[in-house]
Image (cartoon, rainbow, N blue to C red; front, side, top):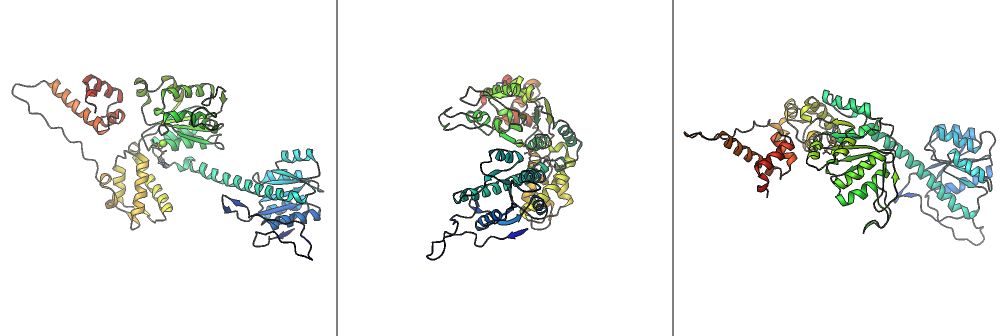
Length: 504
Ligand SMILES: Nc1ncnc2c1ncn2[C@@H]1O[C@H](COP(=O)(O)OP(=O)(O)OP(=O)(O)O)[C@@H](O)[C@H]1O
Ligand SMILES: [Mg+2]
């Protein structure tokens, strides 16, 4: 085995032909391999050929363009070298005694599926080329190399190395992401959370549609990702679409794609998110905000697994698992005719309700500790603990923004903290002091002639409902929550009392 480092600097310029000196066999003018303007780190190519002449020629070509080269004269030598050296590309001749190039590629790829291999075939060996690709080679080169082929050889080598790197980077990133959504990284040990995780583990591997409900910030997206990354679709795409954040006229083409000319700005064909999620999972967040038109189209995808891109009459079939989420009460939306009942039943095959944090207070210390550690790592700050008083306040607080609110608060406290512990005095006043009891309404004085109890109660009720509506800018969902009634009851009362007439 020989190893040759390339000459430095790696950029070699064309040498002018000097009189009296032979012109070199080949000359190069090119920049070192780049990715997005960033020079690639040096790469090592393993050349395997029993013919020394070719081995040396290739070695010269590659070292001149900035690669490190190791060589082997047969398959066995190549395999033992691969076991001990870091190699980025294998360049192997097909015809070799013992293990031939094709068998070598098979064995290399079986050990390391990300390792790119280029096979050197004999002249005109079309059959060999097909076989090489079948064995897992990135591409093949034909012997002998003409001078005019050298640029192609260089390019091919760079591309194969780049592809191998991207594949292994992708594998690493994917395993990091999927690790993040394994159950042990979903923090909490309350009965309420364990019940959710129990359902997640039971249904992750099925293809059934899941509807996740829960207040904002409770972890609905986290649950959706856990479903995907613990399923057999985990290697494929998890595609998120926030149906509430995309304007209605764009959402259709976002979901289903469009063909060229489908509408004014459709300058080219565009694949939608359903097609991107083929064999994977699509997460339709804020599903309650989807328009009735699109609800019909979605229903069809759920029933037949087919759709037509905007402007096309050709059906596309996909194999996608659908997970939807909402913080709205869809049953009430059905009564208000904002959501289709048939779609609701299609989505709600497996319902998962993520409980608000105030209903699983025993998770708060664990979550706080977890976010303290994460924020400490991210901000480079060292905050080790929360004082007992601070922790008690955190546990007693009602957390209307749920886990997201806790996560953001801890991050802010870590950034602002000047010593190693967060104390009660560091907490914002709203968290520090338990919510004061609701103020008692002023009692009307009972006149000697008496009053109509019904009128007093009605009047009082109207005033409180109007207040709640004004406080929430007439958002009936939130107003109902403030009043502790369900939305339908509130809507009925507004109608009966004619409060709509007061609406600004
Ligand atoms: N059990 C948990 N363990 C660790 N982190 C959590 C947990 N639950 C939620 N989180 C974190 O809290 C944040 C909010 O979670 P997520 O985005 O999943 O909530 P959501 O219910 O989808 O909110 P919204 O309705 O506002 O979209 C995220 O950063 C998430 O990682
Ligand atoms: Mg969400």
